[in-house]
Image (cartoon, rainbow, N blue to C red; front, side, top):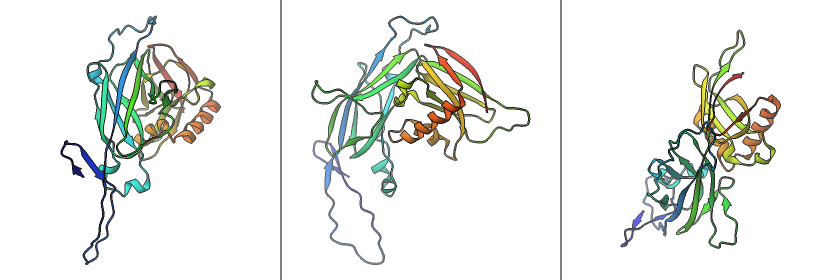
Length: 275
């Protein structure tokens, strides 16, 4: 890592060295400028709020956190942690504008966290430099960032009308609750099958209960499947850009199970899910 006179930082590609009792000479490390991403958070309230949308408070930008996550490959795991880890989370300013600075070159996906109960993440798009080109849906593909790139405008849209699904796994007599169980919501509408942000996942706790928050209104299939030792990964991979096969597999299983629910704007839904 190198610091320039303008206080900007530059970084070289990492090299893995194996020292075995001899000096190493002739190393050549070329530093390149880090990238930055300018963006904004947009709020989209309902034009005609539903009766259940009684929370009129909009999310505060200070309560929103967005981040860029580096694609972790086997090659990236062998590098020092600062090369492949997330670039860090940032909070928008009072106008909703944000900047993710000092981003290393690589492939990224983006995420947003917020505390507002009746809002959901509707879209994440990257606007091209020219206005006559349609913005790119960055939830479906990894965003390639090159050294020194200055991307804009990355737009996170939060929409009003999110529902809450709280549920419990229903066991038949003699059944035991499996460990590491994960509950999924899969869009039932065919035209939403490719919308990554319409897939939701949450772990089932030891008492068989689960909560799915900030769910976009619509029709869903609901199902539970066994996870792995890393339940957090099971939950997150349904929204990874390269999670197409995972989402397709979930959709096939959910369609076969035929357990459909409909979530209306701002609805608080309680559901018992047979195992």
